Length: 453
Ligand code: PHE
Image 1: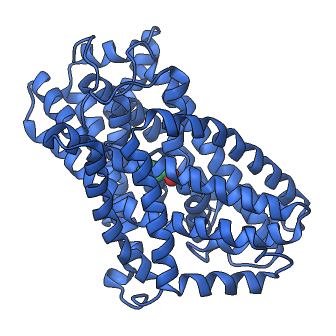
Image 2 (image 1 turned 180 degrees about the horizontal axis):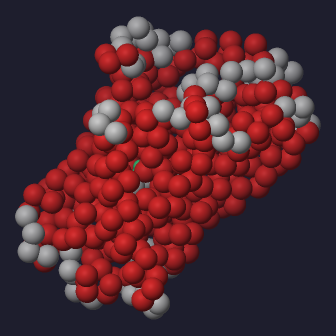
C-alpha cells in the first residue's frame, strides 16, 4: 500500500524473472492439453476466434487489474482484498474474491495433478519405446489401458503432487526460476520442430483449415462460455494467483507491458499446439472431438514414426511435465501464502496441508476415467464437473469481481499510480475495457448460457 511495503516472501529478482514465473504459470497443460481438445470438441475455427477475442478484450485488462491489486496489497489474495477494500472505503466482503480464488486453485490443482501425472507416465512410455512404430489404433489402446487403471493413475498423481510440494516448500525463487529459464525456450524449440513435422503430414491443410476457418453455425452459447473459461484458465486469471505473483513484483516494473507479453506468449503456445495436433488428427483419421485424451492419442503417433522421434518424445513429455509444474505451484501459492501469513505456519507445513487436500480431491478425477466413469451428475463425470465449475464459473466470476473492484470501487488515482502508464490514452483504454467491456462481456456470456439472451 505504501511504496516501501514488501511481501514477507521476498520479491522477484528482476523483470525477466517475473515474466518467466508468470509465463510459467500461464503456459501449462491448459495450452497443450486442454486448448486442442476443447477446440476439437467445439468445432475448431469459430471457437478459436472467440477464444482470441476473450484473451484480448477480457483477459489482458483483467490480468493487468489483478496484478496491480496484488502489488498494491503485497499479501495473500484474501488479505490483499481486505486491505484494498479498506483503503477504498468499500465493503470488507470483497475479500471473498480471495476465498473463492483459493478454493478454485485447489480444485483445479486436484485434477491438474492427475493429468500432469499422465504426462509424467508418458515420459516413461516414450523412454521405453512404447510408441515405436505403433499405429493409431495401438496408441489409442495404450492410452485407454492406461487411464483404465486407477492404481497407475494414483501412482503418477502422487508423484507429480509430491514434486509440486517439494518445489513450493523450498520457496519459489531459486529452483523454479532457474528451471523455467531453460525449459521455456526448450518447449518453444520442440514445438517448432513438431510444427515442422506436422507440415509434412498429409492432413496438414485440413488441420489448419479446422483450426482457422470459422463456421459460426457450430458455436453454441455453452461453447462461448467454454472459450471464455479457457481464456481465464490459460492466463491463470480470476483466482488470486496472478494477485499472489503480483505481490512479489518490484515497484518499478510495468504491469501493462509484462501482462501483454505474458498473454501473447501463452496464446502463441496454445496455437502452436493446435497447429501440431490437428494435422496429425486428420492424417490418421482420428476424431478431433475425442476429449481429454487427444494429445495422448495423437502425439505418440508422430513420435513413433518420425526420425529422432524417441528423443523428441522423451523431451516433449518432460517439458510438458515442467510446464505443468510451473503452473501447479502457481495454483497452490494463494493458499500457501495465506496459511503462512495468517496461520503462522512454515511454508513446508502449509504446502503439505494444501497439497494434501488437493491430492485427496484428485482421486475423484482418477476414478472419473475408470471405476466411476458411469457416475455422471448433471451429465458430466466428476472430472468434467470440477473442470466446468472452476474454469467456466469460478474463474470468470472471480475475474468479473476483480474488474468491478478495480474499475468502479478502487480510487482511480491508486490504479493509475500502480500502473504508471506514461501515455494517458493507453490508461484510458485499459480503464474503459476494465470498467465496461470486460464485466459486460462476462455478464452477457452468463446471461446467454442461462438462456436469457
Ligand atoms: N494457466 C495454467 C495452464 O494453462 C493453469 C492455471 C490456471 C495456472 C489457473 C494458474 C492458475 O495450464
